[in-house]
Amino acid sequence: MVDAEVLISQKSVDQIELVTRTYRQRHAILTLMRQLNRLISAIQRHRGVSLAHLAGDGLFMDDVTQVQAQVNQRLAVLKNSVDAFDALVSPHQQQNIQHGWNTVCHDWQGDALLENFEYHSFLIDQLLQLSGNFGRQLEPSLLAASNIEANLSASEDDSVLRLVCRQVPELIENLARIRGLATHAAVVHQCDEDHQKKLLYWLQCAQRQNKELIAAVDALEAGLKSGWRSLSELKNYELKLAFFLNTVSKDIVHGDCSQADARQLFVLGSEIIDAYVEGVDGGISLLLSRLESELEGWLTSV
Image (spheres, helix red, strand yellow):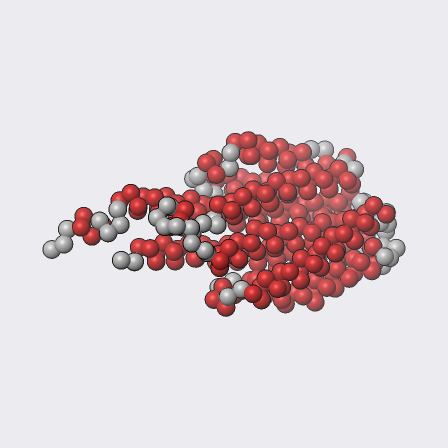
């Protein structure tokens, strides 16, 4: 009969503790990244409906109330989603996030357009940076992060992380900015020169980022694509995205805004944005699955 201690000696107790500790941390990080993805999306939506309401469309008020409650709930869930939250998000960062949201909500109906937009955008940028920082912590493999092996190239995971932490979120934020400012312009039937310049710049960025995203998706390994269906399905939104961007360009930037329907514009933009948010979620699910496989591969290796 083989002693259990002999069996476990192939992988030292210290190694097992290191790997499992790193595994738990990475699992917690991916859980937080998923919560941040949804939280950012809700704040982006809140920015859009707030701008529409500030423009004078009272029909958006119910949306503001609903999304504001959702953000409050998501902030509470974020703090309680993992046991290691306080270790991963410093008290200073937590205070900044809560302060940013409080600033957005405080007496918001008295905000000027630019104020309201910037309050939201500053908070969104904070959260995007936090999620990006989490992503960088996942760049070394599980075993490299546990000091079990050298940091070998993990090009497949690196490409997924680039999409999840940078490329797709940056495109989403530009689309959300376009949705918010274009909806505001459609309500007031006016888009001044400063707003036209902003929209034109974001439109150009979104078109460029979408081309880069398509190229990045095409370059992914077949196995990654099959495990990340929500990203591959974004190609189904190509025509809707082009129509949305062209409508904003034609009716808002180069038109007099009178032909634009604010609600339809907001709904179309939201449908497209939601699909990209699902794409990020799918990437996080893929990274979780690959984390499990990496742990299993190490455990079953001789």
